[in-house]
Image 1 (cartoon, helix red, strand yellow):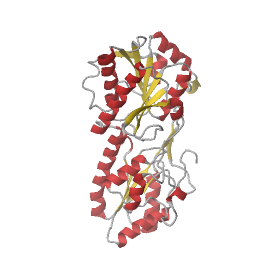
Image 2 (cartoon, helix red, strand yellow):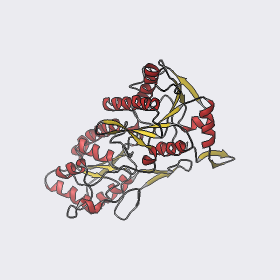
Image 3 (cartoon, one colour):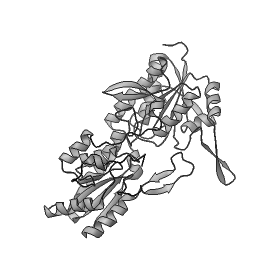
Image 4 (cartoon, rainbow, N blue to C red):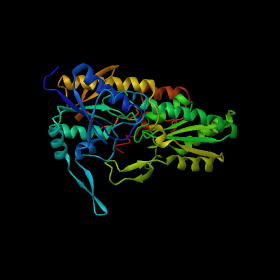
Length: 380
């Protein structure tokens, strides 16, 4: 062990998800058991580092939290150190508080910081690393859209919840002969919609990567009806958009680094399908339900592996990196390679090919190769 490493910090940033406490537990126990390190936990992500809100976390604090959802440290999805919102009068102004964060880090005598989060947290961490902070990132998000890793923890738990919802929707869809539309989160990536659609036996899956043609959706519904299937299940990613159209923005949060809150596209799809097919449609938006609850066994194991490896990397002197999973192995991915990039569903992904083989409609015309329908959700 490097003798310079004696005290490390940890924070959880961005939206919450199942598995955060499992990762914190792994970090604390590995730090104490393997290296006798002291661990400082910051409250509410980078906000806690900026405002110097922290507490020491020991073995007892990390006990009994493996199966608990959320995060014992709290989190924030608007605490960008370089664009930090400060209320002045009745309006927010935005300040660069990165230097304050560095000063607080140094005043606490910390040797490294482990930042658990999604793309926003990794982007901020990449910039903070350039400011001199020795940082190791741990990838979490239900969206599964982080570049540099095959899977993020939180995704499997959300997929289990979404699949269970689709399973339950089946019975009422079949009883009432309706088109049932289930909208899931995922932002600009369709992983959650694709996997929940496959696992839940969805008939139509809409994703941000493949702008949908409402006629193709209606044709799929009519074809099922003609075969005696008098109901259809549509799983929709919240970032889905029509050909030539925009994503549906439910609201805007001015103080957030990513101000757009997507949601509600399923209502538009339902209205059009019902109008064109004369088949009754119903919409269920799962929303934040997908972020809650106890983590799945897979996510508990994955979060634990990430947390353990993050501490090992810190002690080995590997910083400015994110822990990633590639070919079932833990690897170090430079934060600068992760920042500003989104891992989206591609036309040639095995799960997409499987969906096509199963006859699942992806909301586009099958007469044109799927590659020609693909549009980068971020670039477009």
